[in-house]
Image (tube, rainbow, N blue to C red; front, side, top):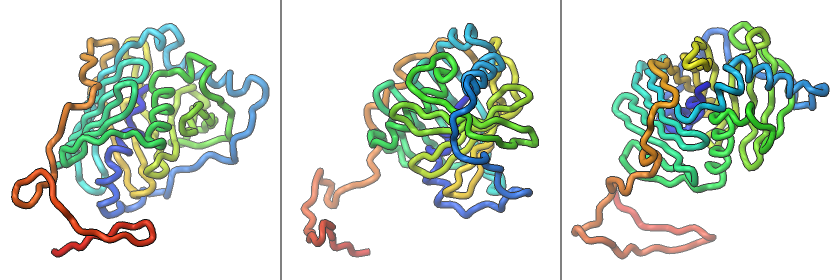
Length: 289
């Protein structure tokens, strides 16, 4: 079960916010889960997790995953912007995603200790703020299947019902220790996850899954629709290939040693003196355009 949609939405948030909102999809916004999180009847959440575990391939198959490598076509419908994505993951928490969308190229990774990003200007950014750290905890819990293979490090409760693609679902709220709470909608008929939603530092993000196919005895969605509410945009990802337990170079997950500078100093020096004033904890610098 690929969980790259949340990462795609975070990676592209700056680009999305700079673009006009697309027309709303026919039928309006996706339905939200009904009600708040409430403790389920005894065994409710546990039974739902066991059913999802079996539907995805079982504990034996999921626990044997060491790496997942995938490629996908991505598109922003309504804007005519298309691109590609390559994703590499090593369990439990290492990942790297490389995205090409139109003229933009963006990469993000996690080396196990922290996240980093190469933005569309080629600048290396280390994501060390508390919000990014919390996102990393939740992403790791979901992508490693630990929420299905272990009962430690998180709490889970049935949080109502939902309808996704015309199918009735049960909503499971998962709260990781030190992470961001997320909601997972489980199809009542198949037991497969069909929607994941959470509120990131860039606002609410949801991803909806479909076209599940078996790869190495494990069910993976080959269609993902990512909704970035703050930018009122949708990204669609169609998986082209998935390889399980293929060799992956661990060095890919380390941040690059450097990146291109997007600035220069007058006269070619390495520094410059700039006058400034301070007022009410703000710094004011004179600028002439």
